[in-house]
Image (cartoon, rainbow, N blue to C red; front, side, top):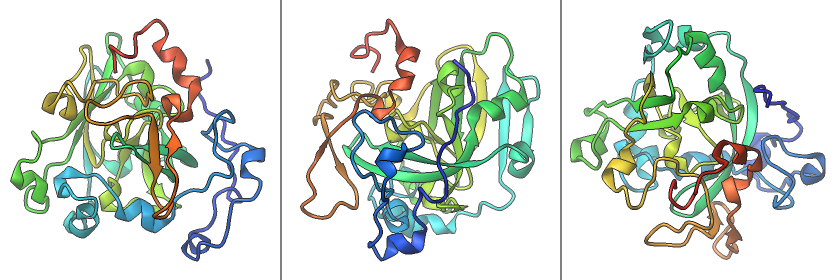
Length: 298
């Protein structure tokens, strides 16, 4: 499989923010034209990206609190200027880099992706970013690396959730190397063509659209190439409920609720729940898990 993902999304396909704010414009013909990153099978017709307000005001970011509106209320105090990212482990070019130096010149594009939370809510987000594979190629992955581990910033003075010990911080996540190199996996630096807000993971976050949202770690300060499967925060907190792979799978329920349906954020008070799609509607990743029991490796 060729690594490079082909983008057929144009600016005509993603509605300008101003039109979304007045809620009058529907993306005419989007389903027929084919939507970047979303397969034809099982796609809702028509599919609308969520508004800027939906995307930036309803968030999980436990460093800033456990309520869905805590991140937008608290994250503004985080200063992302001069952001640095450490790259280490089995790489040719380890070091601590200014973010602009690390990602400068990488090809960025707009991708409209489903985003599914383990709590059974979903959005469609127009991310701006670049393929993680391009960043890994830049730092040079060494033989023996089998996983990519990530770490979020810990800034207790501006992160009330860190001070309260909501989780064992820093927040950490990981992907198998082939998952990380898949062309659907991106590092996002923007939404709707604007810089990504703090509450959504500024200045750079991971987006893995076929996995539950907690895999898409925010405000990254460390990327490590390692041989062994790395620990992940929610798996450490409750391994029974949160597996390492965390693929969207309607056939594997969370122990406390079903994952067979989901509620679309922004759909209004009386919006009907919709069926959850296997791999969140990205069947092209199924080959990554050929031969695996996805009820055991959940």
